[in-house]
Length: 168
Image (cartoon, rainbow, N blue to C red; front, side):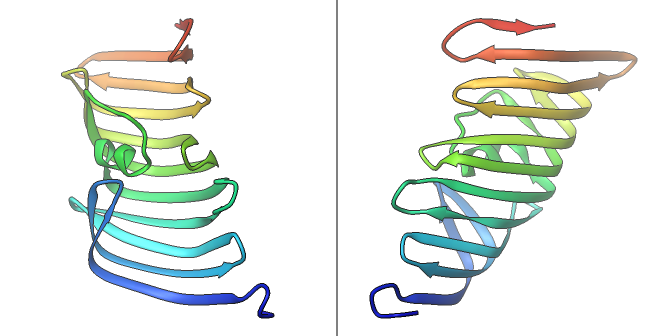
């Protein structure tokens, strides 16, 4: 690009890398930077036996972000921490997709997929089918079907982290 708006493309690989306090292994990324925009057509890494593949980008001036993350055997708690989502009392292995948008400081996140070996507030869950979104501190549960033994727990609705909860 021109001197006033240079374009830089590169490749990053690291045996270990830290992101939002979480250690990642076997990280590899391709990226392009032009002006305030950073595009990441490929970023992959491993963590705790899981494999992750991301594509997306950020406007560094505005903090706007977009992207998608494919998750294979990912540790849900650590994934949420990587995404800067405060999480506790949740565990399990996720296979699915995570869509990211909004602002880096408070991203909008949608998680779709299946969870195995899960725990929610200490309660074990064998399998969970999930389609949950978080936007502006409001969680929307489109699908949450958890199985444990012969029992099923299903939920839908919304929960405002600073206000009303409407979940059935």
